Image (tube, rainbow, N blue to C red; front, side, top):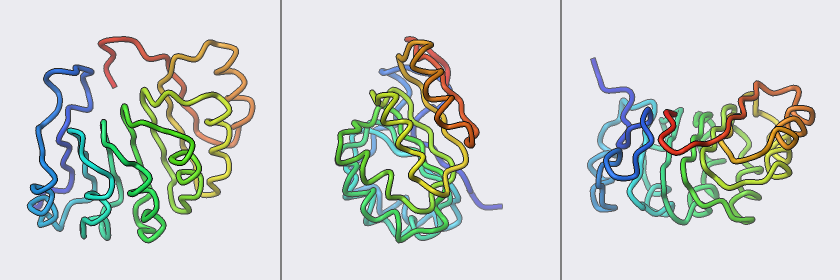
Length: 169
């Protein structure tokens, strides 16, 4: 059997001190050799441009990112990888450029955003991703904001939850 799923951060427990493997950009070349991987979770302040250069993106179906920088550099290349249909972003800065590029990702079916500091309007705008069938967002929205998003995105499998310190993902 081959390793199919690798996550270098603990996706179950929220802890800023103990849940992330320290990985350097130079070490991505070793991860790139794990050609049987179907999903990969990366963290530790890696740069989106370094991840975008990985050959593994040609075969992955899922990508989980925590605290990476320069997300636009990675999002710009995602349309070259039609098999990559699941994207998880945890504590990844989502500025206007990132959100616009994310909406242009043609193949994303399942999108998860945790602690992404996005607005309800940003979430509603994900309806522009034609292939999107599932959206999960952990935020600090109030109930009225959550209800507005639910009402606007009725065709999606939608999970909205409120982030709390120490929360299990």
